[in-house]
Image 1: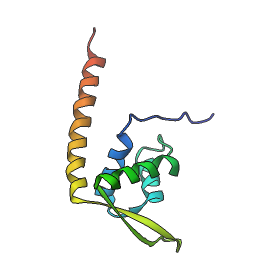
Image 2: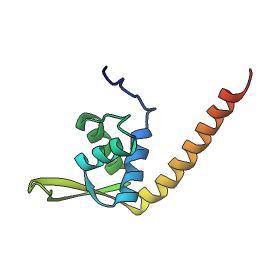
Image 3: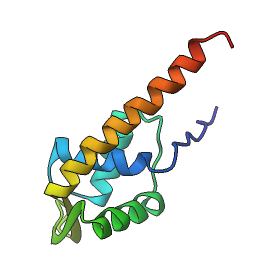
Image 4: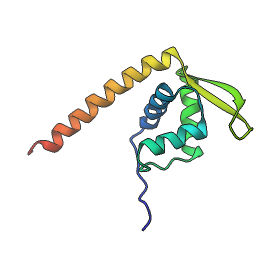
Length: 112
C-alpha cells in the first residue's frame, strides 16, 4: 500500500524550518528536510524542490542566514542558521498557528 501524500497549508513549511533550526542549530537543507520528516513520523515526505524555495524565501526575509561549509560526506553545501529576526518571526508564526488551529478546533467540536 502506498503512502498518501500529506499536504500542509501554505507557510507551514516555513514555520517547520524555523522551528527545526531553533531546536537543532545550523543545518544544511537536506538535513533540515530529513529532520522534519523524522519529527513528523514520516507523515511528511519532503523533496529538495519543496524545501529549497522556502529556504530562499526565509533568507530573503532575513529570518535565516546561509553560509558555505563541508558536509559530513565531504561535499560543499549551504548551511542555514536562524537569525535574531528569525527567532522573533518564529514566535509570531507559532502564536498565529496556535490561534488558527484553536479556531478550527472549536468549529470541529461545535454542533453547527
